[in-house]
View 1 (tube, rainbow over the protein chains, first blue to last red):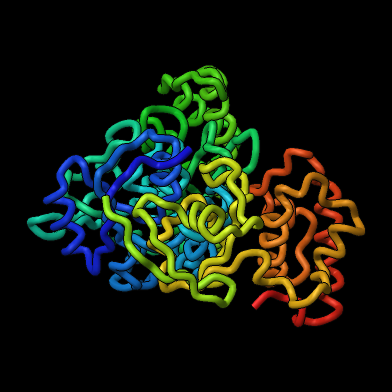
View 2: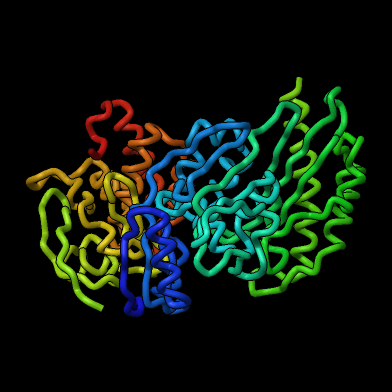
Length: 293
Length: 166
């Protein structure tokens, strides 16, 4: 199909993009990598009157300062996979992004665009939740920081204001005694996740049992979902052994009402949550124990 | 909505074209410039038939706007082929292995495979399969495509990097 008619402006910086977005109102959309927005245009699922291209607004690279990995919003998926700083400081994200789209999509798609798109099956969104990421957004009144856990509202909907643009993603750098795991079920590589699980485990100071756990899920609700700590509390003091990991995964599965669609029933998704979460917890523990050894 | 004039640098030549903001790079390369090796398949970025290089990065022509490509180097399959009648070694592998049936997916397959070999040297069969997930062959001749790319990668590895695209 052919995209509907729209106007196009390439913003020279984020301030200009915010001004254009504020002036354009509901009819304006921000164009980042375009790997979700342009298909929606081509399929006529979106009808903006103005596209504000931010590809010309920013050429920064990932950096580390003050214990945080800073990913400029336009960091391409390929860079997330290949960049030394990302691989070292957020291996969960570097690994998970390999599941996103195909090579051409990963060459253009961006971390900020993916988070702002807020697809409920998003690998990047679930990793942002599991790794306690913050999103820096710029609006007409300046910058503010939004925890990823407060970003996602519903299907393709975030808590960002109408004139706000994601400029950076900040992720605490990985610490010793931390381990990660990402598991996803798809029918074909590069498909949207039926269910995906991102897990982070941190061991205690003796590095023999779990001190803290974060688990995020994709494909189980109207948004990527951070699992409540009350469901993970049983893992504290354990070694993510068969019994404790399975029990936590079962509690998480039972807490969900996953949607049914043409790809999978809700019950199948719940089963995937149980299986993949238990697997992810054991693997994250093993990585943490290996890193601490 | 106004048309604007841009200069597209395609395969080393400059083309002055009038485009609408909503024209994709694929629209202009195929419809305006008559480049038959860049093809409309799905319009969603999943089939790979509109593959081109934008500043030496593989992109979907259907998901890039033509105005975004102004001032950048665009390379289609034809731009990678040598002058004259000599075929590219990967084309020879495709022919020898019967990897091209109707041929619709072939330009995207070849560009994607050349990019993979340039980056990875001699990829495993599994790595080739992974790199090609976004290239659909509706004749379903995948096995022979994998065979052809594997053969080319092993040749390229023994011949050195001269076969790699610029």
